[in-house]
Length: 248
Length: 78
Image 1 (cartoon, each protein chain N blue to C red):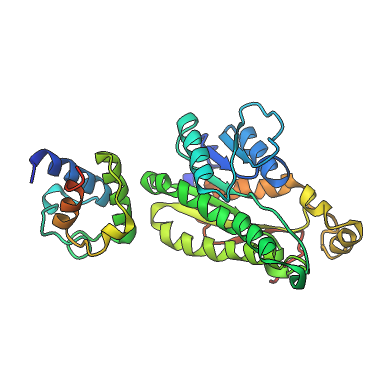
Image 2: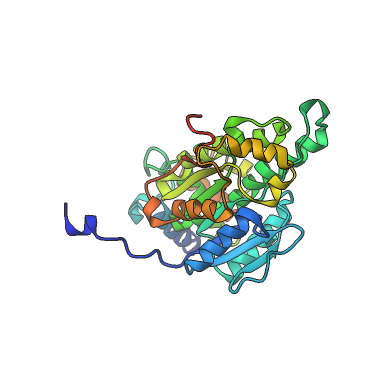
C-alpha cells in the first residue's frame, strides 16, 4: 500500500449545496452542517423562512410547482454557481387511515415528497452531468420500510424515493454523480410532534438505541454521503434510525 | 452546410463525446461510430442548446442517429 492510500484525505473543497425544506428540522440541520464545513449553501422554504444564518442563501420555493423550482435553482446558479450537492429533503405529512384518506391527502403528499424530489433533481442534474460530478442525497424515512399506520401516502412517497435513487444512480454513475438515500427514524422535529406523546413513547421504546434522533445526527450522515469519503457509495439506503428498521 | 456553424457543432461534439475531430463527419453514427450512449447524447444536446442558444424538444430527437441528422436539426433552428 502506498503512502497516499493511508494518508488522511484533504478536506473537501467548498461546494455549492442546495437543501430543500431548510426552514427547520433535518433540512435546517443539513444547511447548518454544510455551512460549518465552509460550503456555499442555499436552503429553500415554502412558508416560514429559516432562522438567520450567516452565509445561508434562503429562497422561497414550492417544490410542487416546476416554475418555482426553476426560479429558485436559477437564483442559486446566479448567486452561488451550479449546484454540486443536492439534498432533496422537503417533505410533508397528511396522516390519516387509508379508509379516510381522500385523493387530496394522497396527492398532496406524493406531489411534495416524491414528485418534489423529481422536480428538484431534474432541474439540478443537467449542470452536474455537464460538470461530470455531483452528489444527490434524497431524504426518505424508516416508514418506507417499516410502515406506519396512518401514513400510507407518506410511506409510499418515501419508498418511491428509493426506487428513484437507484434508477438514477445507474443513469448517471458514468458521470461521477452519486445518488443515495438516507432513511431517518424517529427524529426530534415538528413533523413527529403531530404523532402525539403516547405514539412517540411507543415508537421510541422500539428503538434499539433507546432514544430519539437529533436532526444533527441525520445531517452528519447526509454530509458523509456528500463528501469525498463517500465517493464510491451510490444507490444505497443509509438508515439513521438507531436500529429501528434494521434488517428491512 | 456553413463552415462556421459546423465547426461550432463539431467542437461541441468533440468536447462532449471525447472523440477526435476527424471522426465528426455527417455520416458518422453516434452509437456505432462514435461510441456514444444515451446520456452522451443528452449531454451533447445540452451543450448544443447552450452553444447555439436554442431549445431542442425531446420529440425532435426521435430518429436522430447520425451527425448529419443532428446538424440539420440544429442548423434549421438558427
